Amino acid sequence: MTFWQAVFIGILQGATELFPVSSLGHAVIIPSLLHWSYKQSDPSFLPFLVLLHIGTAGALFILYWRDWVAIIRGFVRAAIRGRVVAPEERLAMLLVVGTVPTGVVGVFFQKDFQALFANPRAAAAFLVLNGVILMGAELMRRRAERRAAVEGRERVVQEEAFGEIGGLSFRTAALVGVCQISALFPGISRSGATMAGGLLASLRHQEAARFSFLLATPIIAAAGLLEVPRLFTPGIPLTTYVISALLAGLAAYGSARFLIRYFRSGRLDPYAWYCVAVGVICFALLR
Amino acid sequence: MTNSWPVTIGLIVLAVIFAILAYLYWVGDIQFLTSTGHGVHHSHGYLFGGLTILSLVAANFTRPKNKPDF
Image (tube, rainbow over all chains, first blue to last red; front, side, top):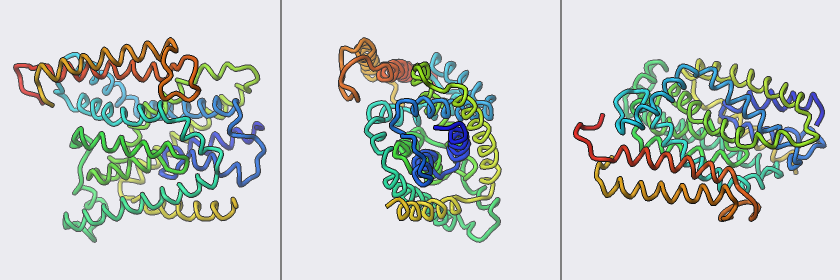
């Protein structure tokens, strides 16, 4: 992999990690479309992905650092006390409940899912499926809006009819966490799956995005940190990888800020259509 | 969450089982559902270590208390 290819993949991964369009799918499909010669099964590619994930998780920690300080304190307090008494303690426990399913499945079956990495056509097909999931979530949301009698009103008013993260039950948080498992397939977006789960759980779009980003942070960070020892393999171009990771972090920070603002009134529809269109085109081109 | 001693004791037993599994994966004595089928699997060890802590936290939550939950 050349320096500029690494930089491009870094920015692409950081920018698409938080958009509901599957960063992994893009990282698999685009190099194949551009006929780049490096192999993603190469032992030096995993450390590269590790650093990009650390960069993205770092950006999310910086963006939500106040929340994370409160969440970590809240977890420790509630765990010692054996009782939840404050909103940040409840949020901490919701995140734990939502993170465990992906953590368990990821550790045991990650390699099986990674076997699909070498197949860009499978990633393109999953990208189409991702678009269908997002469309389905918005369809269900529109039905919920009709039931709440806010159909046709201003988007901000429509959003006010739905809830915040604090109102989630632990069972619902676990189900949103289960949705995150689907993101182990390249082409299915982690943030898309959890945002769709959040919408089905009657969260506002902005709250669904916030919960998705908070839920993603420990998983992305753990996936990166667990593989840190691989970075010290001889022959790894560490400087290039670190620069790419920094750019991935910057891109992730920018895209997270954009999305939080966008989801005040925006919907998942544009991303759904993008996934379907790009997935179909790539599936045809990658014959 | 149900507050009763049997649930609490069950979760403590589960925590002990998870702790043993964490140790066995860490030293490489078991290979169940691992990718290579040999060697140590630190990620599995970390996972079961984390599940041990969470089981103990859950046990503390289910321990019967005098005050009602939030």
